[in-house]
Length: 117
Image (cartoon, rainbow, N blue to C red; front, side, top):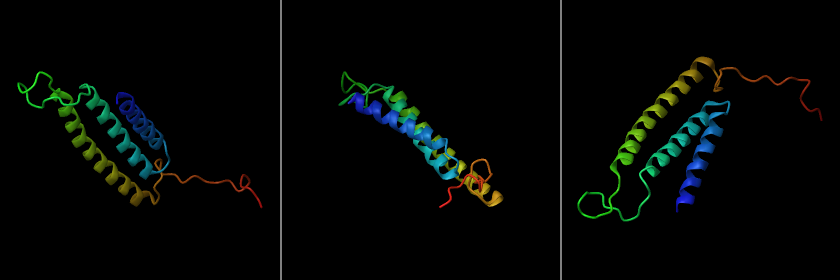
């Protein structure tokens, strides 16, 4: 169970970082979202994964830690606000610059480097 959980966190984080390094705004937004999901899973795992733990103290000797759950809830709200801000920023950049590249410049393909058939 822990290995699968760690693999999911690693795949989400690696995919998020890969998409953050792309040249267009939509993959950057998706990468930021995937990275925040990976961080949320990591924070949630910091409270130790346990099955059957009581949510309320006093009902069982084994209980779950409420701090990682509160951190994840806070991170979800912050991640949602950050995603909304980045989407609005990308829409504004698209309207002002006329393209959706992250740096605002469209890559120019040199005519000499193209393959001729």
